[in-house]
Amino acid sequence: MKKPQTATVADIFARALVACAPQPGSTLAIALSGGLDSSALLHLAHAWAQEHGMALVALHVHHGLSPNADAWLAHCEQACAALGVPFEARRVTLETNPKTGTEEAARKRRYAALGAMCAERGARLLLTAHHQDDQAETVLLQLLRGSGTAGLSGMDGANSAPELLGNAELVMARPLLPVSRQQLEAYVASHAIAHIHDESNDDARFARNALRHKVMPVLAQAFPGFQERFARSAQHAQSAQRLLTELAQQDLADSLDGDCLDLAKLRALSLDRNYNLLRHWFHVRGLRMPSTAWLVEMVAQLLEARADAQLLVTHPECHVRRYRDRLHLTPKLGDLAGMRDKSDIDIPGLEKPGQTFRWQGEASLAFPAYGGVLHFDAVEEGGAGIDAEWLQSQTLTIDFRQGGERLKLAHNRPTRSLKAHYQAFDVPAWERERLPLVCAAQQLLFAAGIGHDCHCLGLPERPRVSLRWTA
Image 1 (cartoon, rainbow, N blue to C red):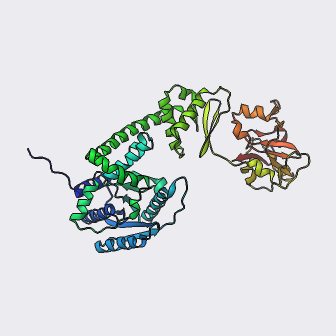
Image 2: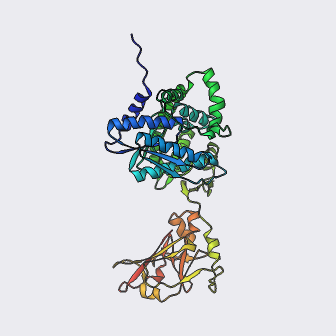
Image 3: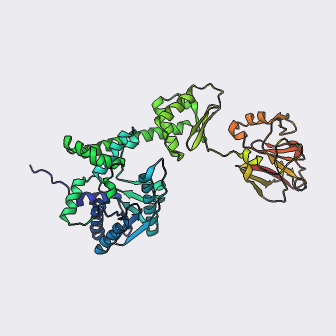
């Protein structure tokens, strides 16, 4: 019985492209650095595009980090010209962050530039030259970082990454992911493909380079072919992660109450399902994934704090709050009271300054110092509102509550404190601090989040307006 023939690099590449199903007549883009991997990709993509009658464009990003960067750009341009492949390069300037480093900054700017060039060229599929050894490095790096299944899944054969590429219509594919570095070296040698060498890849101060030059050779000697087994483990992790995501989607749908989570539903789940659900919730809300230690501490506080506790947990990008057994994610907002106190307007009789204004019939007025917009909606016949002519004759004041204010919503209802109204309307405590009041001659007309005082409502036969506040 004959052994099955080993698939060639070109066969593997072709199968990956068929799986991506590029539309006939569409433009195919490749990321070209000029190194061995991307030079092999250029050669393979050129042959495939010619065979299938597709347009191909090569895209190069010039970071300016190496003194050889100009020479690399020129090499890529010449290699594309020799094949008749359209070439485009973009220079980027890095803004390094001490917390993330140069490597991460360069990666983000590179992919953003590639996404922008693809959008300009109308390319919906971008090919990169990541291969099996890159996948092994990624899995090993994530292991060293203590990552879960999402990190150990490594790189997908194809995925969209709008937050990275800035292009929601673009799919990024890695057709060489099943191919080893050794196979690519043999392919490049057999086709006499010229390529450059990026000296930064030799700098062991970068984590990935340290693995590549110091750790992976030892692994290869002790465990030959480990890259393929790492890739298989990544596929298992991808499968496990898909199941975890499906479970999280179900749990989130069962636990959502509007924009918040019902903590009673979370208490009915195991801790592992809680962690899985909350990670998914953060992902859905577009927030940075919390660390395991932070998540464990947050869940402990949520489930163990007394029932009436006004819990606040700070995440780098938001606040996590508990109110009436509901979990809320709220933005981190500036100190509006501090901005308001800088006002040079002084209202006699008020302990703190508010902002006076006149309404001249506008549909809305913005009050940046109070964080929102006051709307003046015309009231239809039968509705309740303030006499428009009277309101225009008044000097109005907007301010945050000082304490002790009271409001009567209807003639057949009692006058109650704002605190009592907020509780009745289920307004969380942190929102109350940012809901302003509107007064005329120190008479409370309107409290955002509650409504109008019934004493200021106008006669039905006259034009009336209803006040409305939006943050």
